[in-house]
Amino acid sequence: MGICSGKPLPPQNESGSDSPSSKKKEDKEVKHEDGEKEEKGMRKEAVAEEKGGSKPWASPFFPFYTPSPAHSLFWKKSPSNGRVSASATPGRFFKPFLPPSPAKHIRALLARRQGLLKSNEAAISDGEVGRGSAVALDKNFGFSKGFESKYELGEEVGRGHFGYTCCARSKKGELKGEMVAVKIIPKAKMTTSIAVEDVRREVKILRALTGHDNLVQFFDAYEDSENVYIIMELCEGGELLDRILSRGGKYSEEDAKTVMVQILKVVAFCHLQGVVHRDLKPENFLFTSKVESSQLKAIDFGLSDFVKPDERLNDIVGSAYYVAPEVLHRSYGTEADVWSIGVIAFILLCGSRPFWARTESGIFRAVLKADPSFNEPPWPSLSLEAKDFVKRLLSKDPRRRMTAAQALSHPWIRSYNNVRVPLDNLIFRLMKVYMRSSSLRKAALRALSKTLTMDDLVYLKGQFSLLEPNKNGCITLENIRMALLKHATDAMKESRIQDILTSLNALQYRRMDFDEFCAAALSVHQLEGLDRWEQHARHAYDLFEKDGNRAIVIEELASELHLSPSVPVHAVLHDWIRHTDGKLSFLGFLKLLHGPSSHAFIKAH
Ligand SMILES: Nc1ncnc2c1ncn2[C@@H]1O[C@H](COP(=O)(O)OP(=O)(O)OP(=O)(O)O)[C@@H](O)[C@H]1O
Ligand SMILES: [Ca+2]
Ligand SMILES: [Ca+2]
Image (tube, rainbow, N blue to C red):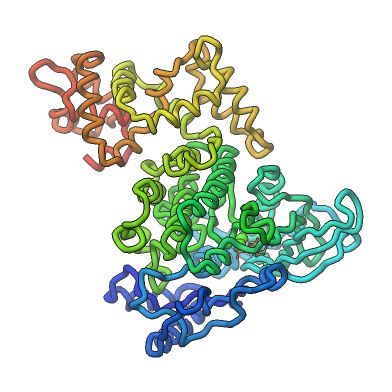
């Protein structure tokens, strides 16, 4: 079955960051994957386009793009009526003004959901042999019945790979007379248990998270023998992608901030609730109305999942242009969403995609290896803060990447309308490791915390006050429990609060003041990613020398860092201890800051 998309495919004639020499291999890879015809067809078209390319930018709109059907319904003046116009597609030399286009899902994702992977590929892909095979599927969801008696279905307003959305009028109940949106997912399309589970989770997550200002409001879910019907608020302003395109790609910094703040708020909220969206892209944000300043709403939780703070997911999910490197490495958490937001931010500010190539594997290579350029126009004319903001979202190492809550406290965003920053799960993860650390490591972190800048402290102060310290300026485990309960939805109440509290058990018999909180909740990895890291570290080491450094023997240091017995500790740790007095050297100090070693730590040495 071909993959049905409600929109034309993106132009395929741009030069990506992948090398031409890799093309042969990609052609081969395409043969194994679903969407082969589509890709090949597009390639032919691309060649034709390259030969006859004419200047597309005379029009404020991109002529190859047909907006979603929602446009014709809600937008009086649609920015484009035309279908793909081969001759008008931008040519190679128009880079860097490559407009974004509707993103396709990663092919392996679709293949798994359609049961198209060969059984051994499916097994390798995530060790779930047989999940994709044709065992009788239970397509009963336990949703309400009698959709037709409650709603009068109207026109289609949008379409995706998994379902199509219509507007509808409510005939009964609280919403009587009101217009709603109904996402209809045909059961016939659910050919694997993965596809069925996706729908189950989509509704469960929507139901649990509904209520946030920037998340589409969920009303109910229905089913009959043919379809699942998800009833939501009707967003009449169209997709963010359509707005980006109708503006000719670029947003002023102020306008980009308006969009970014709303995206970050809803994503920070999802992450706190333990939900990762996994498909953030401009198509999945809708405006509530045609008014330029109308609210933005996140939709489409079809690929979303629950993830615990220390859990790593491994299935490759999302849309190629927006997928984070660690997703391709099959070990990721909520940070992957932040990467996608970085891609959206990059597009908003400069009008083109940071990672582009002709084929899916080319895009993946770019995501893994290429650094987007911030030297080409319009970047030199944008503020340093805007660039720093985008770079810190597009950090390849997820541990160095800002969280959504941190991004809301970044200087570029912070100045915007006094944004309220929500509680950040990251602080609990870091506090947990801190609480389990030796007094030597705590002293090292405390020294480092004394070198934090005002910007770092703004975020930490905000987080500390969200935990509502007692009058004496200290937090206890009870404060954390209350703060978590206050911010939790049903999604989180399931298990996570208890998990977090258990992980912080060491706080049970003591309290923590702000100074110690800074040492506990700072991220060494994030600081390491900054240009000024060397200065920070040197300064911190000087402070540590004055107050904290002590003599330590190699064996003690090895056990402190949880080095496995197989590591030749004397050879490895030789330079970490100063020979003159047996105290930590600067190198040892840096290693200790990282805390108990991971596998990667030992390998990296
Ligand atoms: N609440 C809504 N109000 C108005 N339009 C909506 C609403 N929800 C969805 N749509 C429209 O329907 C389209 C498809 O919905 P959605 O993205 O949820 O489907 P999907 O099949 O999961 O898509 P995808 O291929 O991205 O996975 C959206 O892009 C949007 O244009
Ligand atoms: Ca979608
Ligand atoms: Ca979807």
